[in-house]
Image (cartoon, rainbow, N blue to C red; front, top):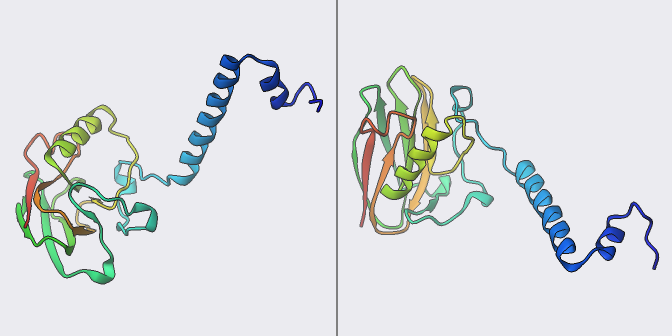
Length: 186
């Protein structure tokens, strides 16, 4: 079969194995990047983008060390957590039964943006460091809620793994000031 000179398959067929591999890897990388950009709606990590409630979608159901996104129809308990400008959560300690689906209502009683992110101490520390380096980073996960002053945010989470986990505000400076709480799942 003859290929027109401008056909990329002609290019692949006339190149050596190394050049073909490089061309294919480049094409796949571009395709994957385009797919990621189209598929990830992303939520800007700035005040203008923090008003939406977080609801788990089928694509967001990823098992984490600290649990999995919960079904809002199966919530067994609702816990309100206040966030204040003295960089504290109230309550700062939660006790949860393994397998329990909980609705966390994060109330920002302060005058600045706060967030609540659930994770392992290691995950939260790493995420806080990334936030310092990339304050405009875009992300929106079912285990986090960004809450403007005077507003409420929500996380529905199933704690299906036993252990000690944390919740924190990862806005640069807040985590370092001690805005961290503890979750014990038994």
